[in-house]
Every structure is written in C-alpha cells, then in structure tokens.
Length: 222
Image (cartoon, rainbow, N blue to C red; front, side, top):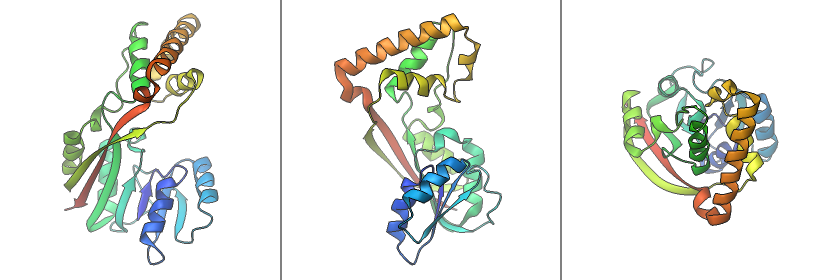
C-alpha cells in the first residue's frame, strides 16, 4: 500500500496496523522534514517505510507496483488530474484508491479569510472547489480511469487555534499568492479585520466554527 503525501505518517501508521506483518506500507512525501517526523512516530512498526517522492508524479515507482493507494488530507496540495493519473499508473489492475477531501466552503475560517480579503480588492479562489462535493470526487475518479465504488460523507472537528495562528496559516497559504500584492498597510488592516472576526466567531460558537464536513472517496482501477 502507498500512502501518498504521507506528511507525518498518521495514515501510513494506521494502514500498517491493518495490513499486518504480511503487508507493506510505503509513505511518500516531498518534505524531508515531514518524513523525519513520520519515521520517528512509526519507529515501533516494522512494515512501514518512508521515501521522499512527489506524490503527484511517483516517477521512481513502476507501473502496477501497489495494491492500494491512499491519501489522507493531502489532495488540497496536489494537482488533481496529474495526481490521479500517477496513482492509476502505479496501481495493479483492480487496485484500490482512496482519498479524503473537504466540502467546498470549508473550513469556515478559511472562508472567512477569503471574505475579508474581498474587502481589500482580492478575489481568492476556494482550493476545495475541484473536489468539493461527492459528485465532483466521483467525476474526478472516473476521468482518471477509475470506477468509483463509493463516497462517504463525514464530519471532523478541527483543532482549536488562536486567532494569530489562524492568520498565519491562511495568509501564508500557497493557495493565496494574491496576498503578496497587498502593501504593508493593507496587510496589517486585513490581519486586524480577520483576527477580530475569528475571535468573535470562536467566542460565539466554537464547535460550529471548527466543524468541517469531509468526503472519503474510493475507487478501483479499471
């Protein structure tokens, strides 16, 4: 099994426990720092290894190398069509693919960030749009040559963060390069506006603010 964009390896570690001693899990990620953390966290498992690789290309893997490819919370950072094509190539016939995506418009604080940015003349796209509902996930799988076997809608609770941390995550996101066009004055004003709204929403209803609907999509290689 391949865990693409494994990050700190939490999904790879869970998968390794599922496949047991007769199975092998490889976690692939482009970040050496993430892989170092993953290796440390999985030191007690003998059937998971980590490699540095671009999860959207997987050039170092032969076609038909894996029985399954999974990706947990990584699709947001990967080019959709190229990534699914690469996964299709490295899967064996009838191999399983599974990934998670978040509904369009979530997380709520990311939506709030984009709304606040419009007040400063910026039109920021929602990075969740391409896979933002069950039908879009199914269509993406079919376009890549998979049969979509099922989609599952669930809800996760995001960890709480202070307003400053939420600002840093959104203002530094690679999905919003337009932010760099703002001058120092406007950037400071946007930070003040956004963090003030974050504090208000968290004080009014933290549970709803941190609630995030997600989609788990599964398919098989045709």
